[in-house]
Figure 1 (tube, rainbow, N blue to C red):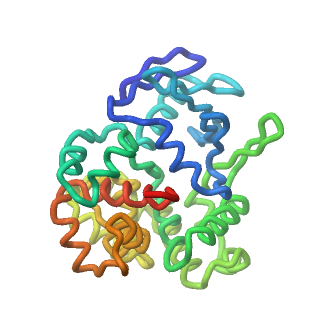
Figure 2 (figure 1 turned 135 degrees about the vertical axis):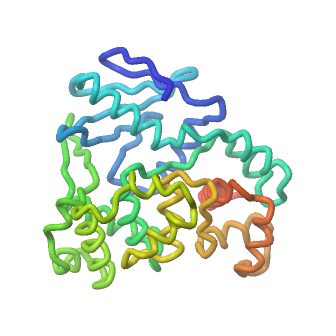
Length: 305
């Protein structure tokens, strides 16, 4: 992480291939979003660091991300943790020059890469949040998924109120490990999703699942197989978690409906492509399947492509 600590605020210096406004557009795609708030080109984000709830205000000035602390300045170690979270949230370790080289020669991606240049995968650094969000989104539309997430966070998450507004953090796996299926069923979760989420929470509480352990495997197939051994995690969910939380640019949720619709729109096809056709379109994306997918998802929020 390239950063300067000013005690009352941080300066984070992202790579040259970074477009804060494009990242904001993606973050602002749902009116039901509860885990951050965007106001006048600033992001307000509540984080839990060492048992403290810390509110940060994130803006982009000239060539750096400025992170302010509207309530009070945390300790140096806590400021560093906030900076590290933001660095990971915006996927700033990823060198995108290789992706743009690949995209510039690809019929599906070349227009999108130029149009959204500097957009980064908006990650989910917390493994439990990434898995739960993926499970919530299984086989339902995005609007209802966001509704369920909002209910879930408001029911089980922690919050802080500042200047009349309430900010939330995602519930911890420790909290969810102590509830029962009926607690989630009341929020309109299906029985299976309720069982899956509580099962993951209890497995993480017992130390059976941990982000650090998965990353130590350092192999796409080993990590994917480990994730798929968890009840409720299939191929799509595993790839989504690897893409959004574990930073694997080769992860490819090939069965994703949004991906299919985006390719159909971009290529002006009469029908959605088959899995076999998508594999052919993706033949040149090797090493960058996750970024190709993310840019295609981004295109779905444009009225005119």
